[in-house]
Length: 212
Image (tube, rainbow, N blue to C red; front, side, top):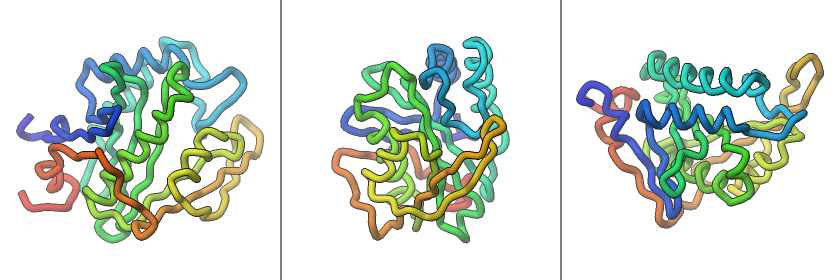
């Protein structure tokens, strides 16, 4: 699409493809949400959108992507990518920047269909967007956070070399919960082998990072 080049943006890794989703991709991602993301009684998200009926989870997933597309500006952008493994959409990995030209800081967030947990996909897809952040758009820092009981997310973050960056107390479904913040500086990042970025150059002007 000439006026929306993000559809040509992707990152390839040894096992995965991360890309701006087509409508078919978003529909399949909705199926993953409907199937389930986490076990019953656990809530990894501040907004408990996954604590609904399967059909509503699918619809809200699709609507979320539509909102992110329509709200994107060079001063406040978010790129939710679908994660494809062996030809199947398995989850989503987001990277976002606010006032990025000044802060050179990105944030990330993700979820993975529950039946794909425990295969190392979460680590590989986070590594992919960190590669986009540091090698692609020139970030100086990447930040993330997770609730203290989200052990899988915390394990991925620590494995990738982030350093603890304080805590925040949130109201999660009427109860206080500690969220651990993390920060990764480009100086602490090692560029991974076998990771490639495709179609980024034409996207840069829309992110305020290049000339039209």
